[in-house]
Image 1 (cartoon, rainbow, N blue to C red):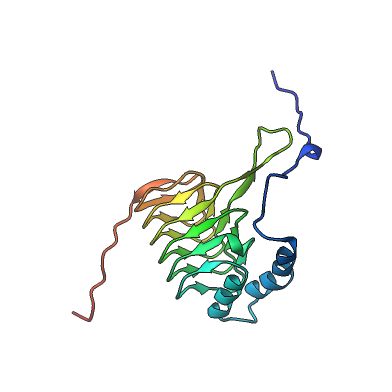
Image 2 (cartoon, rainbow, N blue to C red):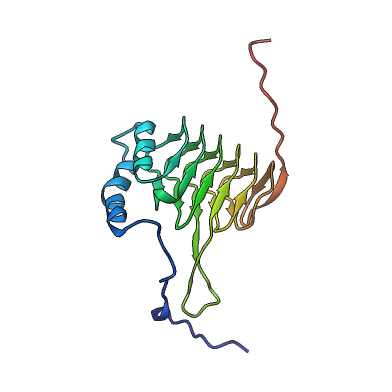
Length: 193
């Protein structure tokens, strides 16, 4: 027997949610800041970092941000040092996204901190932070769901859909993402010998 459908989106309300900044700052971000951040006309990664800092992001030194990068709310973004963000990567951060040191977020990756409760007839908002630990790599077109923690040194493969946290030094691929193998990092030799 099938349950009756009682979804009623007119009952949706998110009065509990606080985006973390005033509406004036949000308007300035979406009309001026975000278009500048995404622009290929201004190719400087340093400019993009300064722009994000101006809007409240915590960005460490030596961060490289490519054109077409998108951030919903910079004031909810914390990035360590020596990180790379590829073209079209999207940090949809209704709440905090924390990125450690030496992290690579590849082209088209999507980090999503907000979703809807499918069991709620009003489709209530669910918001959970995302954390990507030191030395991790989120591959091109990969997606991270709300509440996910990517462990130190882990790899999320090309196009993977991650709905559960990934332990340290593990490689996860597929949809849904699943363990493939441990990540072994071998130091490179210096010089030609």
